Length: 125
Image 1: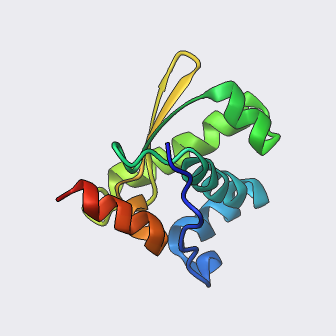
Image 2 (image 1 turned 90 degrees about the vertical axis):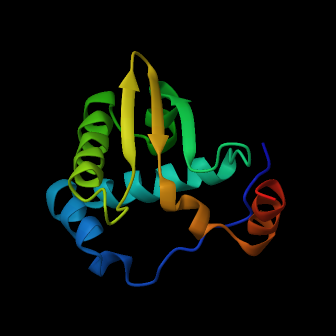
């Protein structure tokens, strides 16, 4: 897929209640998992399926340099928050199936850089 050049990282993210709670609960690892996942999604961005990322858990753990147990625990936290706040479109949903993780982040499209957004707009007609 096309590599997203960058995604909009909102300044003051540490004040965002989702990020704040993740850091409160997991320390810097909470912050790193959230933005690390978004970076990985951007690296392997799929214009045909924006906001959906299918990756091996092993790769995520290696990239984030965290244990499998800790990574799964933090991803479960973000998944739970996304489910509770589904109307607000917060965070991302995580589906763990064996060693594969499927991450769904519907708002990821909105965070895309202008170049990527132009490609997405062409795709959607």
